[in-house]
Image (cartoon, rainbow, N blue to C red):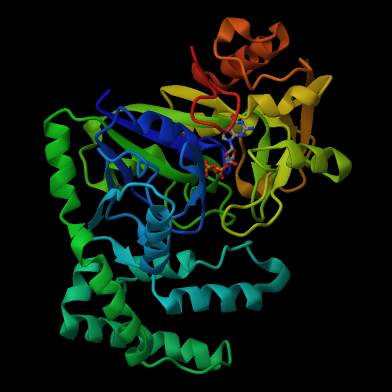
Length: 426
Ligand code: GDP
């Protein structure tokens, strides 16, 4: 096990943070390779409960190198807040390394995110307003600011001028607000640059060497397969690839180094933000699952918004595992379903033209699709203290085996509570 990617098979919030925190104990490096502060990972361990947005989930182990690779959307203000809060709560200073090639989320990206979501109104995408879409738009339009640019004042000023020229036209004439001077951005960036300076290095070189030495590296994905811009429910997707295949790109290691891909799969479905969600439930049925889900109900770690809830979706999860190239699966939140007599699962979709399919269709075809449900027996008991597969009630074992067979990936880990030790390894 040299390099393991831990990625979501669903819409995000599958419990990747918990699985990463658990596996970090045996790893040298934990690497974030995409996304920014727009999603949160909840971790519960002996230091307390933490919601990490920018920091990799290995920060609770002093011996682990935590890396923010070239592919991340680096929100330095958020990173600093999180880093200082961690230390303030008694966690030993983590070892943190930030790629000089990572690009920086600017306050103007957050402003554009807000203005655009407001302009779209009901047609919006449910943005977390952390500036992620405008950030990646700039990155690929070659207008982005790399961390290394922060330490070259002349270059930084020129790049900001170039980037603001077009943005100011939009600010004034599309959104009807005041333009922005580069001075206003420069002040904040200089302070951020000073804070981040000690962490900045050539993380690519560092990780390549770690690969050559056969050290164990975890690549920590953000969000899930169905939010990927190429393979997910575009345009209700995020703006960076959520797929394990992007791990080597966003972290700067060879493709062949990735040996294991753990797809984190949730025992039911939850979805934050807009977009088609075929196994969605509503009303009291959804409220109850939401109340019981996760460690303290299913509410966004970043936004506090109630998450949309649904039953386990075989069609979406099998597709998610396939696109992730999963070599194994970690099934989380099984304990949550212990209140049900029977557990519905969605095994196929009926599309609006009447076709029934068990293959995940493109976004347009998902509109108006209905779930075809099968009902599995519930176990009506508390699983949170169970530590081996054999100890699980027969119905819970059958539920895990049903999922394993249908997603076509071996479930090697079953999580039965938010705590680090609440886990069954098969
Ligand atoms: P991530 O972004 O994939 O790391 O997931 P989140 O942190 O957004 O959401 C997962 C939620 O489920 C958090 O509240 C976790 O503490 C919680 N969690 C993780 N695994 C389990 C589990 O097996 N059972 C329960 N009840 N909660 C879990």
